[in-house]
Amino acid sequence: RDCVVRTLTNEGVRSFWRGNFASVVRYFPQQALNFAFKDELQKKFRVSKNASKKERFSKNILSGGCAGSLSLVFVQSIDYTRTRLGVDTMNAKNGGRRQFSGIVDVYVKTIKADGVRGLYRGFGISCTCIFIYRG
Image (cartoon, rainbow, N blue to C red; front, side, top):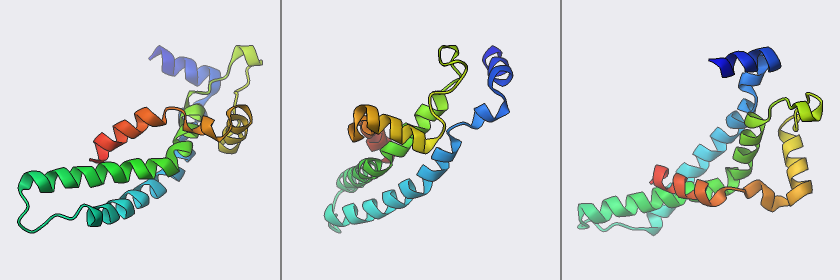
């Protein structure tokens, strides 16, 4: 409760939805890529008609997990910007200003500081989690 009240008084109502646009931008491509990749991967991991339930189940999990991981390659940078915007608070050290002004600003500052590789920070753990989730 204290956190909500403090955020509301210091940063206003809009701060609760900061980074939400990046979530909206990320959702459609991620879902579309997941479906497309899973269909293609299921063709690669063919299951014979007389395959056991265990084999069917395993190949379904494998194709879903691989599809999720592949789609993450394309949407990880959007996820990164969403996270950075969501945790970017008004800082007394910066004279009460935020570090980032929007999605494009996150991209520009991150690439300037760390290169494109900086947009993929945390990719390993995200990939592991999405593999399990999509599998």
